[in-house]
Structure formats: structure tokens, C-alpha cells
Length: 421
Image (cartoon, rainbow, N blue to C red):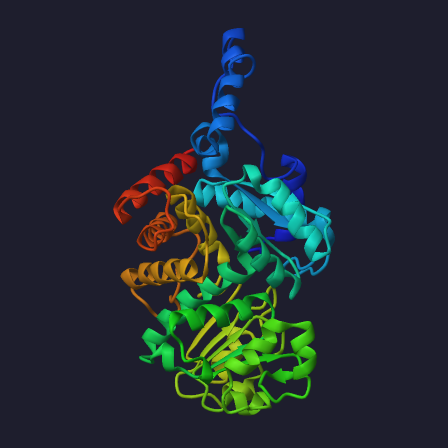
């Protein structure tokens, strides 16, 4: 069978369809009376009602189901710094996934801001009418400060998919991989290759999940982070997130990657091709778990990893089993956030989504080639939505109360209605 040229097809369909998304209406206009209801003079009553009570915007406008996808195009997956305009096709793709798998209206808004204060100010000024903010494809460490600032300064929930979404998908896979090899993830020796958005967020999420972080080693391009590394003072000034990790992890102060791999149970790569060598895997503990998730080319090919002794391998690619993809998380997660009108998203929200994703795979039957669902197993999205909404209710973050089953039924009905179109 001839292999499809996905790049050529992407250009063809983008040109044919003039993009991947469009704005549609929820009402029909058949007469002047209809216009009088939906626009002037009738619309004035709607605006007046909202001016007296902001909360009515959730019931009287599309805000109940609408988020904004914000990027400056400085770290687009597989492409790097291509800028805001060239990032638009990727953001349209995110919007398509949101709609088709979560029933969420996600409006792509690439912006030109390269300064943290400017970026935060732009988002704060446009977020007034959003139900939530999805940050995407923003370079590190810029992205860490932007997320923290916006989470603290906005009244609507803020999510950075490259951080929390990727970390949640990875955690789901790790939960099931550890289960398969009969190891306790919370006491496992874990090596994280790469100290960018995904792995710094994964470090944080693993900590919140209860993993013993003293047994975790994070390595950047200069080697493992630890409290006595020669550039530690420079990190304190330039990257406080790496600096913080250096003091919370790697209690043995291991300084080489070779030693980091000695007796390791798990390695998770979010870095670059070639950064996980076969000889490193051979130094790992029995039944090693190797997540080589760099895209589009992983840190080591699954074939090489298995040959070197890996027991379970994941990548970020759809043409191999065990694809760790944040698209498994974000459509359902924001469905649950919007349905429960959650006031914020944090790492425990990500954990709730990860645990539900892992549980879904468990019900299907785990194997070396199935530790995490794939995107076409569509019941994962209402499942994740209901878990996230239930978590918001239990933690007092929800504006709408309900049972987990209530939120599942609500999400499934909405998503199915989109799927039938």
C-alpha cells in the first residue's frame, strides 16, 4: 500500500477548505422579525441584563462554551519559532479537535507579544468574554511565567497545553506502564530528559501525585540538575523553575547522564532526537519503561529501544502504539471545566484527567502496546470531562454542582451532537 503524503494532503485540504474552522450560527434568520429579536432592537435587552449581572453572560451568550487559544508562535511543535501567523494552521487544528472531540468552541488568537508583561496584558484585556484560556506553543521559560501570572490575575481558568496537557497524558501512561511491570510509580527511579515546558510541568504534576521527587533526576542539555551544579547561580537568575527542581530532586547529586540511568525504572524524554542512546537503556533496572516523546522524531526509535532492552515504549507519534498526546486530555478537560464552571485549573485538575484516562485503558485491558487510549476511542472525552467536573465539585471550585454521572451524560450528549453533524 502506498504511504500517504500527509504534508501534501494538508496543503491540499487547507487550500480547498480555506482553513479548518468557521463561525456558524445557533439560530435561524428567516424574516425581519427574527432580526429584530436576535439583533436590534431585541439584543439591547440582552446587553442590559448582562450589564446588571455579569453571571448572565454564561446563560445568554456563547461564553458558556467558548475558550480562546492564545499563542505567540515561538515554540510550535516540530517547527520552533515560526511566529504568530504561521502558527495559525496549528491553532486551527487545535480548534478542530476541541470542537469534534469536546464540543467546545475554541477561537484561535495568535498574538505578536514577545514580552511577558505585554503578553499578559493582551490576554487580560481580551479574556473578559472567554469561558477560559488555552495557552499553546510558547517558548520556555517565558511560558512558565505567563501561565503563573495569568492563573493568578484572571477570573477564568487558564491552561497551558504544552505543560499541563502533555504532563497529564504522560502521567496516565506512566500509571499504567508501572502497573504492567508491577512497580510502585511513587517510589520509582525516574529520569526526565529535557527541561522544557513538558518535563518541568511533568515534574510538578508527579510531585502533586505523590512521587518521591528525591528519586527523580531531570537532565537538560548540560546534564542532570542538582543543587551544586556549577551554573546553579545562573539558573537562579535566568530560570527559577530549573533552579527549584535542582534542590527538590536528585538527592544523590548525580552529575552524568550515564549514572542517572543506572538502576532507573523510567525515562521520559521531551527533548530532541538522539538524546536517549541504546547503551543508556541497558543501564536501567529490569523491565525498563522508555517514553521517547519528542516530535516528530523521538529521542530513540521504538525499534532501537526494544532492541536495547526496553519493556514498554511510548512516543508522541500516531504511527506507533502508546502515543502520548495532549489531545487525549484537553478536549474533555475543558468540556468538564466549562460544564462545571470551574473557577480554575491546576495540577490536581490534570491529575484527575490523567487518572480517568488511565482507568479507561485499564477497562479495555492493558498490554505492552496499550497503556493509553488512542484519540479515536471517543468515549474517553466525556469520561475525562466528568472526572474533571467531579473534581471541581469536590474541591469547591465548581459554579455548577452535579454528580459525576450527571456531567458524563451532559458531556456525552453534547459531544455526540457534534459528531453527528
